[in-house]
Image (cartoon, rainbow, N blue to C red; front, side):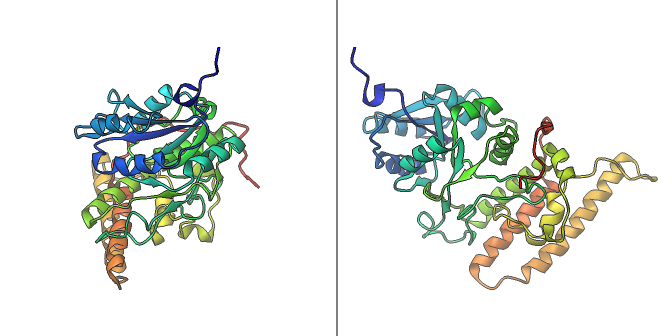
Length: 351
């Protein structure tokens, strides 16, 4: 019996792309992957999360040029986490690489991911923010995860990375149960922390480069950053036990990473909310109204103070991001999620 080759052989890497109404951008990502052409068997899985545009048709057309490409119907459960999890159940490789439908992998990305996952269980690479964003009229001036992993204030014992440029061995993915599907955002941070709690290190590899596409327009920036702020608040609830163990130092007022550039909001925005209500004459409803009023007044004061820092056009986009992130933290809806209890063997001091 002859050994199967090409698309029939068991792939050495499964590239997973969650997609929802991605017809406008997915072709760029698929073209970048097509140009890679590794010498070993691999597969690309587009996990369609119930698109209503031409995403499915686009993928089917691309399969003529890419025999490695497969389309998976992931419409049964909604959200990017569900799309990734459903795709992984169909993946045939022992190594998984995740990228997004609106970005573009750099030259050599597939080979770099393959090599990194042969050496490490969990890897991530840098985001490059110039190539896909030269024509934007209004976008933030910074790019996260350019030269290092993110460290979140209050959770300095961990590092995190965006799921748009992440690789993990399938056994590790299965061990932690994949991405948490109840999260609206920050599901990648949550995944990173749970993998590390399970004893697996996240390793940064500078050769795994992704060209990331930024949001254009102040409204789109505000919507995204508000969701990210709410996601960070969700993390503070889910990992309240770990936040409570984190030491507080004078440097906590500044963010360590550049994933949430919130400036002087970082100290208060990284601490979990207190669950014990203050004693006094206020009823539960009145207490809640008073708390919202206090937070709202603080937010307005900070907005006026930060508005005075605008010096150039990009500063306005950055300001909208910061303020919307803070608003998302203070006022965004936090979905219910089971709290994470660190295992007894977890090392509190990674040094």
